Amino acid sequence: MPLWERRAAAGSQWLLYLLLVLAPLAGWLYASAAGLSVNWFGLFQVPDLVVKNAHRAAQFKSLHQVSVALLALLLAGHVGAALRHAFVLRDDIMHRMLPWKRPPA
Image 1 (cartoon, rainbow, N blue to C red):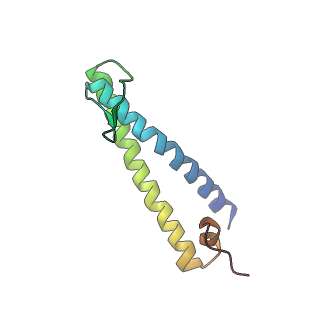
Image 2: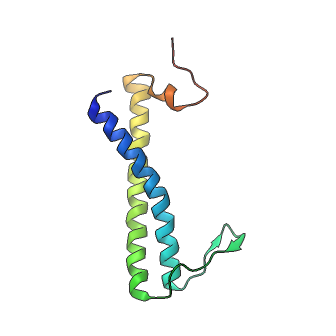
Image 3: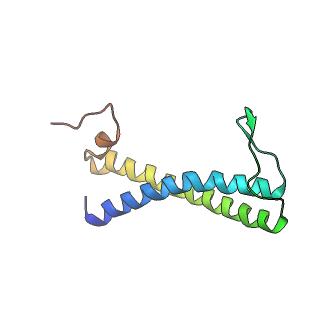
């Protein structure tokens, strides 16, 4: 792969991890600031992270929406790039990603 593709792949992978943490955290902060109760998969109530504040709630809601939208776009690009490697370039990138596949000899 060219250097720019390797850097884009590494950067997008780190951004995916960052957004996987940021999006739910921003949602939790929004719910806390909006005075909404949050539970973890119906098992238990999670504590509020901030006090109720309408202005902060609007900010956290925007952060949550933007981070979820970015996550969706990045995920679509990631899947598209994986499919490109598998079906267009036909290189061994998919084989390296999947633990049960072995690269061809």
